[in-house]
Every structure is written in structure tokens, then in C-alpha cells.
Amino acid sequence: MTDLELPKDHSYQVDVIDTWEMTRKTVLHGASGNVRIQMPGKKYMAVLALREDID
Image (cartoon, rainbow, N blue to C red; front, side):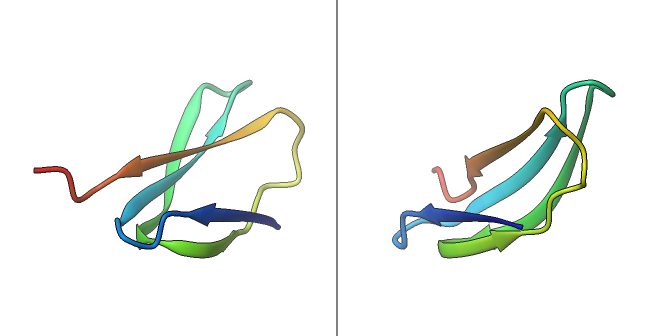
């Protein structure tokens, strides 16, 4: 598990990136504040949080 602290006043899409397989999977939509992400049991994984509420 990985914990992230995102700003509470915006919503985010959270993706997990497998840097070896070159894949990206969305694991959360509308995330804000403290969130917990289930990570695969592999090395060299990355997390990307993209703000969703941009006008």
C-alpha cells in the first residue's frame, strides 16, 4: 500500500505506472485528501496524480 496526500480543494485521477511493462492503469477517480493506493508487488512502479477539475 502507498499513501498519498493530495490537495483537498481539487479532484485527481491517480494512475499506477509499470515502468518495465510500459503500462499505465487508472486506479482512482475524484481522489482528494489522504488516499491509499494498492500497489502491485513489483519493483520500479510509479504513481501519477493528474488534476481532473481544470477548466
